[in-house]
Amino acid sequence: MHQINKLIYQILKMCPKSIVKIFSKRYVAGFDFSETLKICKNLNNEGFCLTLDILGEHTPTEKDSKNITLEYINLLKTIKENDIDANISVKPTHIGLDQGYEIFKNNLIELAKTAQKYSNFIRIDMESSKVTDDTINAYNEVLKKYSNIGIVLQAYMHRSFKDLAKLPNTLNFRLCKGIYKESKEIAIQDRKEINENYLKILDHALSKGMYVGIATHDEYLIKESYKLIEKHNASNDKFEFQALYGVPMNSWHKHNLSKNYKVRLYMPFGDNWYDYSLRRIKENPDIAKYVLKNLFK
Ligand code: FDA
Image (cartoon, rainbow, N blue to C red; front, side, top):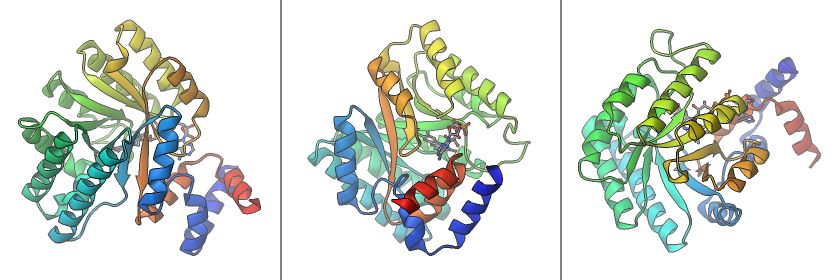
């Protein structure tokens, strides 16, 4: 099956975009915003809260990154006007970090200011290790003035536990495994060790009363998280579960919602859907089944 999946992924990569688009629908929450809005309303009605991500990264010019920031500002306004239960997730290199730290930080301040006006929240996604320091530094600087901002820690990074210890106990962070290719000097490569570090970080965070977005599709980690929640007697307002839109997690979501745990879905949308979709399709263990099902539809 592994070989068939690999082959299908290679074929999809050579297909015209219009074909890939058919398979992308599962992972992309709308190619234009009116579509996204409908999907968001339905998911809110089913009990999910959301985080919206305008797809894209490594914006090429300062002007472009300003435009993306403005798109995010409009998004915050639209969320408010439509009474959607969603915050936003933003990548540092999407809003200017490739053009310079100050440009990124100033755009981030604009977002935090707007989010405060609309009683909303900004999650700064964590990208590769090249930008970890800048991301944490900008977070700390913006936090001095705006509290409605949060960060992401990646369990595969050797440094993450130390980073956590330096961050305030009022921290609101998302904990994920980490998706970028990193060397063994920078990131743990062994899956079991990554899981151990994930749980070590979660244990520490819950013991300090930090707010954690437990972002994983790994059933083992979800089960172990329940144990830690119980161990620390953590109340529902100290954590939430997070998953990517489209990853088949239905029974876990139902279970979590039935326990009154908050479940937040990460909703990527917009024009830059191609690379993101291929990455997600590649990670889908049932890709062959999934492609066949869509072909027959
Ligand atoms: P793992 O990879 O072990 O997957 C667990 C199970 O889920 C496996 O059985 C797998 O088959 C299944 N699965 C995973 N992806 C699937 C897919 N696309 N389709 C079907 N099944 C799939 N990373 C980062 O570096 N910076 C960030 O800011 C974020 N942000 C983020 C937000 C949210 C809400 C999530 C859920 C994840 C991220 N990530 C991220 C990605 C994260 O670091 C990680 O790469 C993925 O979540 C995969 O790791 P899991 O913990 O899900 O475990």
